[in-house]
Length: 151
Image: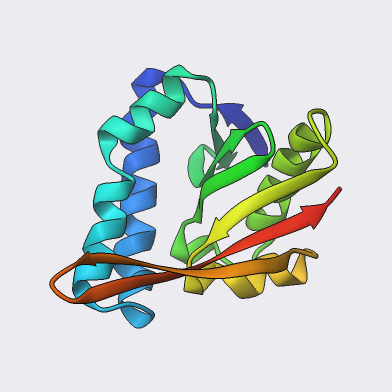
């Protein structure tokens, strides 16, 4: 396993991986319009902006990208591991790397967790600071947690 800082020519790899996980996992936790909101939130434009800032990382194993994550000082986001690669250590490997980067800039790290990710973060020592809900249109609400870990 290796971690690389994503480059603009890897936009499709990051987007495809992100969209694949959202499409395959999120409908089990959220109604369709909320899952669509996540796809729009993690659009190609937003991902490219973060890539250009040097904030996006890719996990590669055997010539395949298996995960991605975004790091901004002490805030982690867009943590996605391909569904066929989950529960195989890739997520922990990526989080170890991103948490180490965060420890260089502060003593805590924050993550906004969707429902599918909350258990993963709790196992890594993250504690829920608060629960949030945001309207996404059509009477639907996005429910998520703000979580923090002391480094």
